Length: 65
Image 1 (cartoon, rainbow, N blue to C red):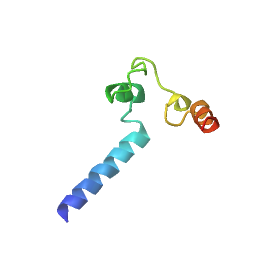
Image 2: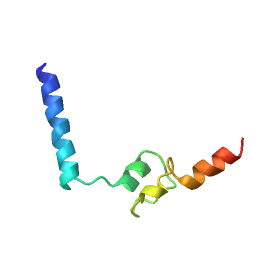
Image 3: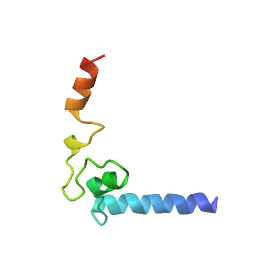
Image 4: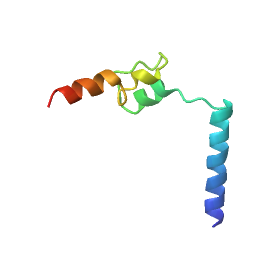
């Protein structure tokens, strides 16, 4: 039970830090380190450029069966 309390407090603290701007996630570096080598780690990644949710990519995939 104590473990769950500590994990909950850690997650709450992490969420607060991200919301307040104390922590920053550099998505381009994170995705490059995860193995997506076509992403430039030195250039900021905009939300519409994320490969999974890109509208251009989803339209082209749905058009070709």
